[in-house]
Length: 167
Image 1 (cartoon, rainbow, N blue to C red):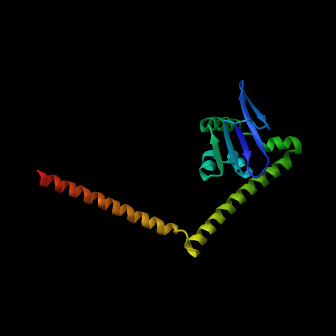
Image 2: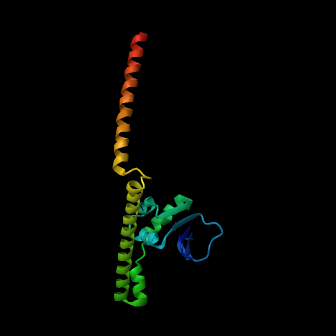
Image 3: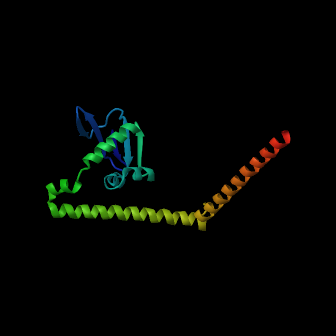
């Protein structure tokens, strides 16, 4: 399986061989599965529920999804502690500070993206009228459901009347 950090040259290949998980920086000819996302989204896989990250579209999976799921379960069990690894190089206090900074940057980035998406959606819905505002769409869909139920009841009445008149 290959992990690709979009917008960067970073690619990591995970190989499962003989009961070991091997990391490689070499690209395989044809990986069985590819997980791709921005560096922040890939780090988000370590902090959040991976299914939420994938549902949001931050991460894409191509190739053998079953294999990617098995690798995901394996990585969940391993769940590397990035701070501990960095602490071996820089010491505990700088590693904790870097981890805290990274967590805050991820939270800020996520919050900023959410706010920007809402602002763009509101602009397109209310200013440009290119999108239907959520409240209007929900009201419309409720009315469609009511009409569908009424049409179903009317069809049932017509069928009942036809069966009576036939007998």
